[in-house]
Length: 389
Image 1 (cartoon, helix red, strand yellow):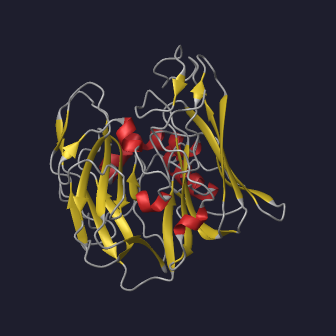
Image 2 (cartoon, rainbow, N blue to C red; image 1 turned 135 degrees about the vertical axis):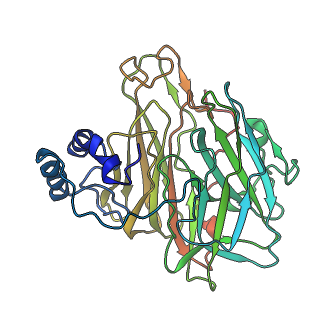
Image 3 (tube, rainbow, N blue to C red; image 1 turned 60 degrees about the horizontal axis):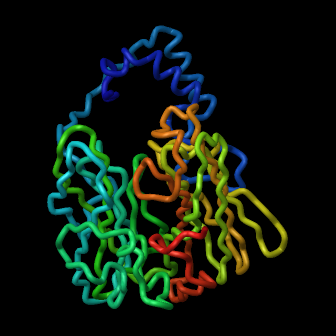
């Protein structure tokens, strides 16, 4: 529903009261008590909830009428501002039904020099059908989808997506620039930090749509905002805190999955984004430091697939060499989960919403001149490699 004017809000007053008292809205699923506060915390204070409750209980009276801002229908503006560089998806066909595979598009940037990007913003066209959209940076010489043409939409197999050269470095192969899921809000990464796109790199779109009964054509865009100078800090998106070996039994109501990674170089933690599908129940990310100290970085006791928030720390957490990061995820594959597509199935890692995933996306900050490959002591297993038996 639209909530732009008093006339639009008034019929929903009781529902609004119920949603804020139960803390269903605004959507914020991080439990209090984590070691760090979040700069994008959307949760209402108790005083704010009481203000709304009092207004509803008093009959939801209208306040002073002021000038109503006119909204232009059908126009979607950039929230961060006008981008310096924009890439648009050239008409991806979204069928009205069926199961759609991951679809890709490789776009050359033609950047003649290394370019630092302080922010990136998606402007999604067909929001009603998009499951997610990721854009990766592919450096020159990378093996990532190297056999596929540029500027053409294509569908590779999972094996083709995971293909890489022996010994190829993690970030030389690909780097996540920006991702979109329901609940996404654009924001610059750091005042003194940016992500690097090396000269001659390509942008690789990874797109996944869920048909909703209406055929559509998508022209989503991503806008890049260039840093005015080489920054002091470099931001890296990490997707290696994950469990590729999921095996959720039929009817399991509390299946637990764990993933760990150890930092081989110092970094600062900027944000965490839990990602699971509709059987996802909860996720907790902890840090164990070399001095023996342990702390909870993020606790999401009620994961919501429809609001996949990136939790941005108000003050980045210092992670020294040897810090062990652990993600614990719980899944509900029982009939009690109303979103469960098939409680009788054994569920593994997979692309579709009917499959599952366990990823804690991390954004880490390092010195701009530091070697990003030093963060990982060994190359992680890639999607497409054989799972353990």
